[in-house]
Image 1 (cartoon, helix red, strand yellow):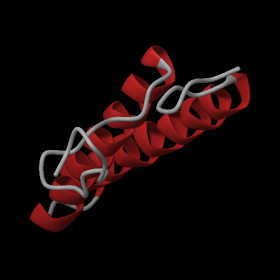
Image 2 (cartoon, helix red, strand yellow):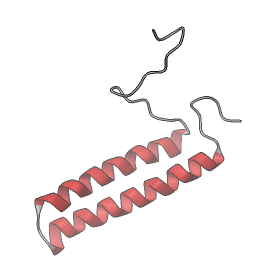
Image 3 (cartoon, one colour):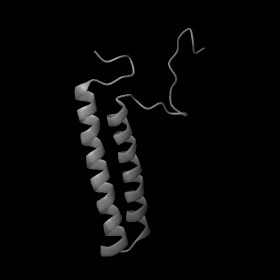
Image 4 (tube, one colour):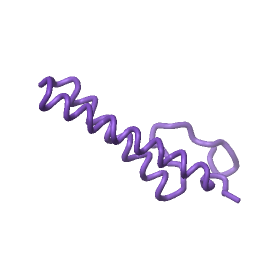
Length: 80
C-alpha cells in the first residue's frame, strides 16, 4: 500500500501517461514555433509544456508527489 505521499501502481501509470502527453505536446509546439510557423509564443509555450512533462516524469519515476516551495504546507504538530 502506498504511503501518505507515495503513489501506488495506478498513480504512477497515470503520472507516466501525463508525462508522455505533456512532453509530446510541448515538443510539437516547439517544432511548430521554430520551423513551421516561426513565433515566440508557441516556442515559449512548448518549453513550458516540456518542463511540466518533465515534472510529471519525475513523479512517475520516483513514485512520490513533488513538494512545491510556494505551495500549501500541511498543518500539524511538526509544521505550525
